Image (cartoon, rainbow, N blue to C red; front, side):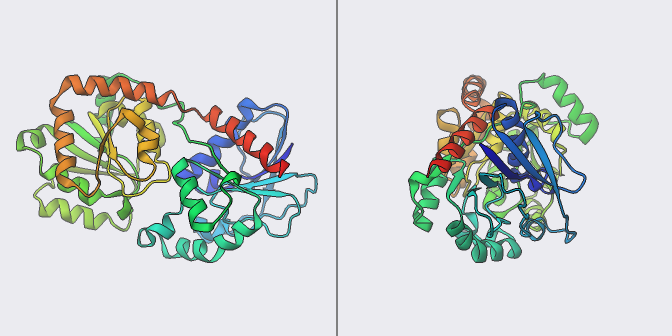
Length: 373
């Protein structure tokens, strides 16, 4: 097979779920495939290093709007007529129309349709205006969970047999580390000395950070004195609302907003925490729970959308609208060392079900099926 992949998200959207997916997919395809030929379209003077000789890079013109979705919406021009299949990983945005080869997109989820108030206006316009045309122009869809597959098929009346599920995975850096050493390094670098409960992810309202803060407020005072709530992630537009809610609940000294954490430090946070709490209202997949599990960290997650499929029996599941239930399960995990130990073992076992090499092999299988259509 001769495969073209739009790799721009790996550089322009680095540190996001789509950016991580694009980068990890290309690297893992290189790990497992020496037979097929790949042409990776990248921004000028950028490349993904250490790829095999069957991977070539084609540099494309870069724009400078400082908006990923604006930049990537400019399609790559495919002058290489040998390409048999072209793959656009960023929800199909930027898929070239005037090409004759087979076309596949990775559509991670349809959050803009389900919760439009939680995405940027620019992305919402692109999604609503462009996606129907993109789907008419592509031969297959890759997505990241069976939940997303069913959601996409129903919403767009797209043939489910042409939607291929390739679950995501934690990167290799996520593994068990010394809890004491991880805590020491976090104290030195971030000034967090206390034990803590952890949230990892974006600041979108769909992540339910308000609900998490309110659930934390309901914990017994003794637990709040012992365990801080650490909320990682770049402080987005909703940050002031979250900070103000913490102040209203007299939690200013208990809730820590770290801002953006470099990826190399994230394993320290997962290993140092007592529990990851992920009470999202909607996820197409949800990487933080898998990253936490790969570190042997207990996870509390929502019982909706893809999260039960991803976490299976290894997490405690809560209704994200039930603040009392969330408080109850956080208290259970913090107060019960035997429960925590059981959850650690389940987390490590579940995390082994996922690997990026498996994602790559599933993707190759999808490519082969699409080319046979």
